[in-house]
Length: 475
Length: 103
Ligand SMILES: Cc1cc2nc3c(=O)[nH]c(=O)nc-3n(C[C@H](O)[C@@H](O)[C@H](O)COP(=O)(O)OP(=O)(O)OC[C@H]3O[C@@H](n4cnc5c(N)ncnc54)[C@H](O)[C@@H]3O)c2cc1C
Ligand code: FES
Image (cartoon, rainbow over all chains, first blue to last red; front, side, top):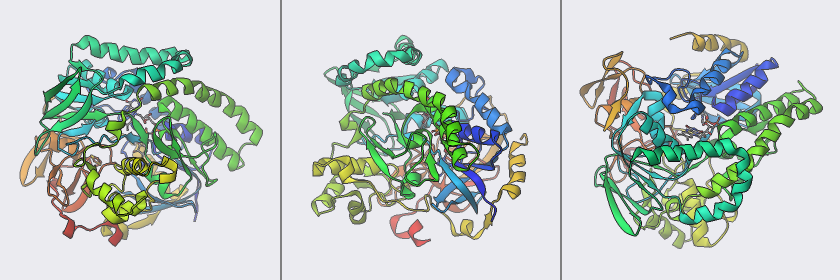
């Protein structure tokens, strides 16, 4: 069967940049994304915003429209609404699109699945009305839908950005509950001088904090002991701050304390992973070009370790250059010459990233649940107590605990509880994250219906062309 | 309370949510549509039957699984509304659930 030279999963900044670099050299490329439009998380709907004025989202968002436009013009087979659920190291990809199953083959595979938000397992986090702050932003960008009178709780640049976006739109906010621990300011201070080289980034961050301060929205700093109030749905947030316990009434509570790589795809492929102690999450082991432990499989962008959108674009270019070399389109010397500038730019971002990672390192008590009754596995409704019981019965690693308690066996396949379960076990054992390990995952990476499986076809480069033109047609 | 920032009445679509007709702006996710309709419960938890609603809105938590046009386990945050769609709160409890392991 005819195969693609390269298949890219994910049309965010990483995937789009890689596709552009490859398409310039005339390669046959397929780009799959489960979204209807290219853009990924940061540039979601940037080419076609439903908002009356998208500029309130900021220049970092609106500049995405340009990248998307270039991507859509490129000679690329863009498979939109395509959810990849099996990726084989034989170059085979199975995906669902329009309620049917499709298969394609590729020589090089580039995974750009992006990040997801770090779950915040506090009491009451499963109540309807509790969402991640990123979810708020998804609803805003794609659906022009907002929630009035919400509480935003947590820490980190993305939280402040979303709060600022709400403020610019005049959406009322009940309170901002900042959980950045006091100690983090001290611990991150030595990293500040080197981070100052990226003064523009720092100014942007401070600008957001100023916007929030000037708005008059109540801000509670150094908050701890968060708990969502309510029986059937969220009714408010309780927390300690300034030596007092506060109750803020709200129907919606938005939580955020950073992002982590979306691991299920890279884990199911059994690529080598390592623990990132700076960002407190697992990530894929790669060389500077994103090449994984399986030579024809590369990873770029936040899916391979959190580097942000600009970093994701550079990583996409680097992975593409490496694929061009591996496919004999350029020499090693050409690869390295062209890679010099993106590599240097990526390296120059590291000090600022290190500073931000340390400053906004999530509080331990919010990363791992402290109370016995708090649900850890949302799907199978396993509490911290249930898991501890499993541990006491002898389940010492995430897979043993999974067999015993069913944690991680529900429809989300451990996406939400994976890091929490591994973190609790590592604490209980008194062992490192590496020694404790992570869930073993396999395909399919989503729930499938038999009907969907019964409708099956192959996608090849020539046959795929009409799909691309169809996608390009104005709606 | 969720609210749409789009101008009223532009390209509305009508759907049936738990037997009731609702009208929402076109081009929305099913999740946003039910949130705007003031009925954000997507499913009942498989063991306790506790009400659940969307958590991530980007496809990674599976809290938004609903029965859409008769098919269960559909992620409402990843589906776009279509005119005439039938959406129901999902109430599949543990003993009646089909898991991917059976497929
Ligand atoms: C909810 C959310 C909101 C964010 N908002 C911002 C922001 O406003 N500003 C900012 O600077 N950073 C933001 N980020 C951080 C984000 O990670 C960016 O740094 C950037 O989008 C990363 O680019 P990427 O190309 O690596 O991945 P992404 O942009 O995340 O793109 C990954 C793409 O892969 C697709 N995908 C994943 N799995 C599959 C699969 N199995 N099959 C098919 N397609 C798949 C997804 O649909 C997505 O489009 C956000 C992160 C999240 C989680
Ligand atoms: S809300 Fe998380 S998967 Fe839909």
